[in-house]
Length: 470
DNA sequence: TGTTGGTTCTG
DNA sequence: AGAACCAAC
Image (cartoon, rainbow, N blue to C red; front, top):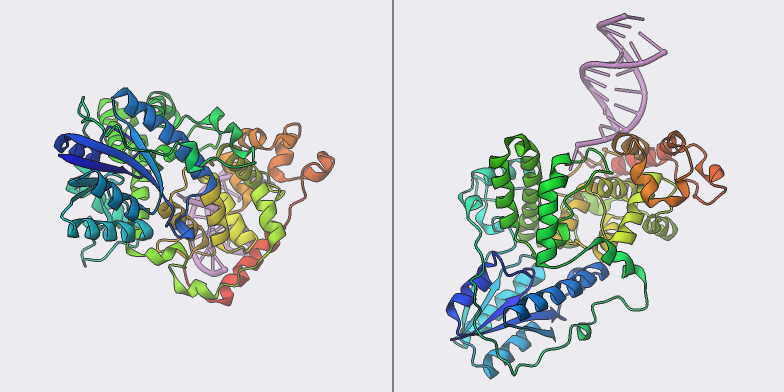
């Protein structure tokens, strides 16, 4: 039997349900990745995502070649590309793992209908979440809007216990004559910018890279992992791998559970981390049920919010030149490494939305373009959370004080000094109190672009102006 | 997974 | 004076 497996957000061989089933049923198998050129702008890959995808596809090609298979690369309209392949190569069955963004759902539904009408078998599987969004409902059969009850229902859900599985040792043969684009022809690497040049210092994409990171996390970092405690402590750094499915979230969840049983002293830290994985599913859940939140406020009261268009302040924020050390450190970590510590994401987000009164969508787009782990569902949910416009959102009047946040989470100023080199020679106390940093650095470090107290009061006024309750 | 400014308690 | 607690934003 001739079959085709379509790789999407699942660039791995292990614990890949659709791939597993395709391998078991096929005598000859096409493995394909399609760069979808029909994607609307809200879902088009950002620069950092494209960089990561390039690296990840390269690794996947290598892994498949070692097993005597190959990865076919195409770009264009997936409907047309699949139709042509299926017809020309006499494919009987097509397999993929489901994804849940608005464009993916629309595209996949239409492709499935189309192929089925031509008597092609289409088999789709869950592969990118712990539990799929349509399999979780509250008691009144509605989607959850609040995380805590969602979380509780997850802990009781039978699907959470499903076991991961490995790829069979031998793959069906490939179609030797099929033409494929070269990886470079996909045009994923940034042109004329040296922005991504240092990313390889920090990241090794691909399934093997994911497992190396996981092992380091479990054997070392996790012992010191305290959620949000100290910014200079390690985080898991697994988010980009999860985004592209280089490790399955189900596998990760299980590895953690096993470690928790083996080492009970780690169980509370592990539960806290697993809870973060369930936040990731919660984001998919919200996006699946409320697809318009990609561009629209979940709470319509926010449609009247008096956002300010201020290009210079936005630019200062993106460049890490706001004059608030913790904000600037985070924004520069993002620019240099394609990553930012989660706690700092909240601080810089709050600063953009509340201190600068800039629409959360500008921040969302910047993160979307520069984060290697940019995930539509998580990014939208978290920005709406910060802005207060989301379903289960931070109350609008909860305004982070960047000084207090730095004092609490970076008391030794290690994080700030790592990412803001012009402050390295300034004493810690002056940095944490933001005491005349412009003068100390002879003007190298900028003055604060807004005064915290004034910005706070202005934000509270704005919130009152459209009477947003809680 | 907030901050502020007030009151009350404590030494 | 400073911690501890609390309501309001």
